[in-house]
Length: 130
Image (tube, helix red, strand yellow):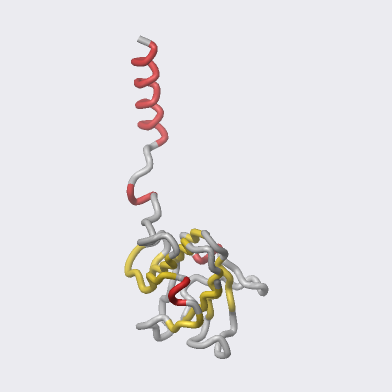
């Protein structure tokens, strides 16, 4: 009887609070040690970066970007540090943001540089340091 009451209580709680849906959960960055970047916040739309961090150390330009609506969410599922640049190269960048190891950032509006500028829609290139 007590088990039934607990089950009913849990079902009621999930109904009231809402059970997490697949849409609420970040997608898996394909493998341990990978870095992934999406066009839209919430890990949605096109995935423009999905690399093994240790195999891809160094600087990389994000293909297909020409200054509009860049990266908005990032998963760093590695022990490496990722620097995001606002320009096509580090020297051309006005802003640099750092993504720590094992960090999930669902909206780059929350990632700010030293001047307080957020990274959302402004990332053109990145660098991986392990």
